[in-house]
Length: 171
Image 1 (tube, rainbow, N blue to C red):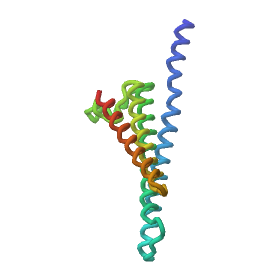
Image 2 (tube, one colour):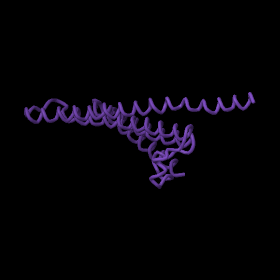
Image 3 (tube, helix red, strand yellow):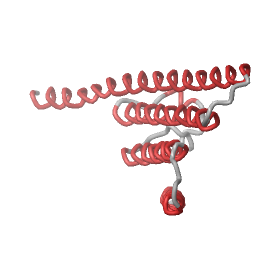
């Protein structure tokens, strides 16, 4: 009897992950709001610049950098969503609303194992890193031919890495 009580307590302790799910979703919502506010700020900045006929230095870089920064936040929010949905499905229960939609196997949020969750999160994190790299590259100063060579090599390395990441995902 004590063994059954203990096993039931252990089994029910899995519900503690609901905290990770709830706060993961809260974090995702916050990131979506902040990224949207960043896009709004870029839009206001662009509109004000157009109205005043001013053309500040690095105007285009500032706009592109602001938008890419927002995309970065959106991608991190997506990681939080995938994490929250995956943890919930793995530890608590399948999401009935997702099952009702029909094509459960091809759903982006369908998680059936910890490895599947890890793979989906890793792919989005790689995209976050790619976007962050692109944002940093916008603000680089290229003073020598060697700087340009490093830039070309880093883009080549990134392309090769993404190619192999795609190959691994198709197996």
